[in-house]
Image (cartoon, rainbow, N blue to C red):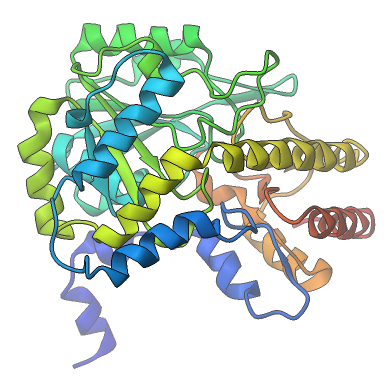
Length: 397
């Protein structure tokens, strides 16, 4: 059987879905000696030993069997306590569902609310892992470009709400944003809430970076839909243990949803993964209950590294960007760059620094590069110096 015949026998969605530019850059430069990789969204620190020990103890006790589809009660209780601490009101464990990473939380939400030819609106540039899963299941992502003007990213609400049609099932918002570092205000969230209520569509929020927020008043989290919405309305929030607690490889996250959806969510989890390993969840309980000091240190490092990156980029006249108010990414435009993927590969070859191409983040992303600055500070400084020297001596594609 020919390769062409094999490919033609699978679904067009799985065959034709474009590769992630982030993965393409990483696979291209991964084994290059001396490369400084800034392409992926994770820090350089391993998971704290205190969290690992809880998982190790669980394994030693033989907790290696099937478990609750929605997550062990202890973790769901810990999630409720965590939210109560940070939002100053009571939360119920019945609204939390443990998933195999934030990505499964996103997949679960998508599978539950969007079917064939249904639409989900996504402000763009955006992480490609919303649009891709929608296309794979036959739904349609409607990417609404944000504007970059006067050094700021702006969300045009008239344009956003005009994109709503009878086929629209949800509006997806990631705030703080990957890749932009842009953060929605409370007023922004209220405007989205009110329009979604009026139109009878779901709010699908990704608040993974809510703790990476550089507020001017010492805030410990970004504005959230939980500040302005009822947990029992059409609200689905995806989150993960990956970023705050340096647990990207653990692949544990959660979906926050109305409790009435519990049986439907459990069915989707059952058919996709049959639950998340108990010993991993024990480590996540430790992270929630004993990880605040680590989260604070992560934020302080991210803020300092952001300022370092900003200082270097400001000295490069071809570069334009908005100083991020959240997350841990710089998304910067290079004047004259037309092909961010080609430029990314050139920088890997010629400067030994790995970025992610802006084109992979959808409409409005081309002409930009993304870097993750939650790295070892000395390595970040070296990467910025290499890139600055490269840009002074080369013309981007």
